[in-house]
Image 1 (cartoon, rainbow, N blue to C red):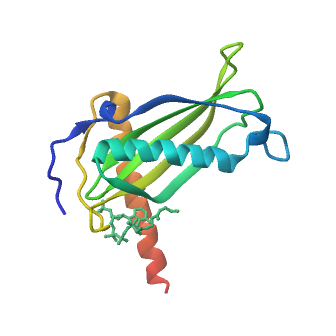
Image 2 (image 1 turned 90 degrees about the vertical axis):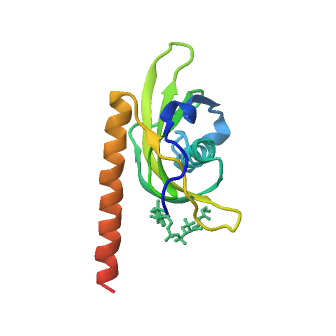
Length: 165
Ligand SMILES: CC(C)(COP(=O)(O)OP(=O)(O)OC[C@H]1O[C@@H](n2cnc3c(N)ncnc32)[C@H](O)[C@@H]1OP(=O)(O)O)[C@@H](O)C(=O)NCCC(=O)NCCS
């Protein structure tokens, strides 16, 4: 498969500070925010980014890493941001960052960084081409290069595991 459309800028599909207000039913037994809820929220926001970028139905293929850096708590306002880091033939890496804001004081904590791979599907439900990304800022370029390192490592790990079978 080869890319067919012109490259698109990251800004055309990115989501900035999607707001989710934490209520008591979002907490775990330790009274901090349930990690599975945060993962689900990230998956939904990243899905929207992949749909905007590709214009296709997309599915989550994998999550390379999901790092919980600090807990969020009752009453916090979660701010979820997501953007395409890089695309290949049919797959896209979407980077997601979650912050927890104390909306009274304005204090903001970094809660999560995660990398999702989504695959675009055609009408036949098979993987189909997606447009390339055109990184324009230093941060976008750094994420673009990092995404290739993560993909190479993922493919290498898969190859190593297959050779052990
Ligand atoms: C993701 C999926 C569409 C890939 O289909 P496939 O027939 O294995 O496709 P291919 O082997 O031809 O790979 C297609 C692309 O997917 C990528 N891919 C496949 N499995 C992957 C994985 N585990 N992690 C990351 N990327 C993956 C390939 O690298 C390839 O990317 P490229 O086209 O950009 O090079 C298929 O495995 C699937 O439908 N999975 C279930 C998805 C789903 O239901 N998600 C919601 C879970 S509840």
